[in-house]
Length: 328
Image (cartoon, rainbow, N blue to C red; front, side):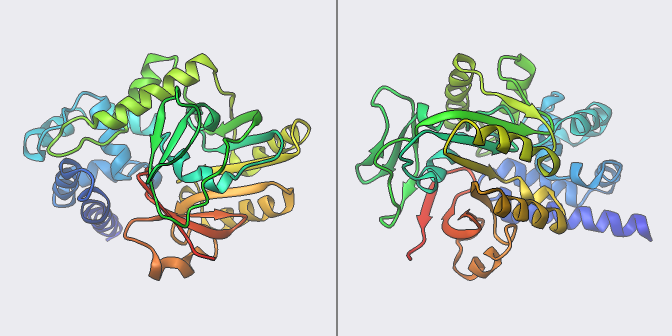
């Protein structure tokens, strides 16, 4: 009975992934997820993974990392089963560290325009590709932008209420923390980040996202970010203490991180942010930061909500494609 319950749960999660998350973005992954949801043999393999490692985007990225091509489910199902040991090993060792630089375009208005040097700490920083907000030019649409004309561009569709900063933040100190930091100077780590980018259409590369990843990797290689290995609950406080000695304002930010914590651990982290005196900017799913569940009725489908010190300020596309600033 327990095995049947576990299998049903996996099937339901993959069905939801197909219909809610993948269908609008990656028809190929939607097809894979539907295939998994109705395949007892594949579900049995996935059930051997820890619950946090059973998520579809991690399993699918691990499959592609193991050499499974981005082709329709019927053509790859048997190969996935044959390669399962390698796929499971990658899923155990790695995580969904998407590190989408375009999220900076939706976070920048929440950062604001600091009058003096700020310290940035990214929680769940992956390879640290979002630790250089000052190295890009931003295009918010309708002729609105900020940044050097010679810098690579991050574009988002921002509504008219969005407070476009007059200048980029002056970052005097920056660091990230991650359980398993990546290093884009290592070919395998860069390939993993490439593999985490979902195929579009029936299996085509998402050329725009790949180009953006490579631009962010170039910035990181030219100015390597410091990303320490550690746990956000126990180790972030040490980075905050160090940052506070180097800047008058400390901004702690993260995207799609707290969903991997229990509700109690999320509250513990939120309490620490409130007590630490930092500016805390979260970019998470609806309801992940306490209180944001009250915004659900107004949120576009699949939106993240950006909070500043736990107060909702905007809805955003999870990968930074659009930003809807909330009216006061």
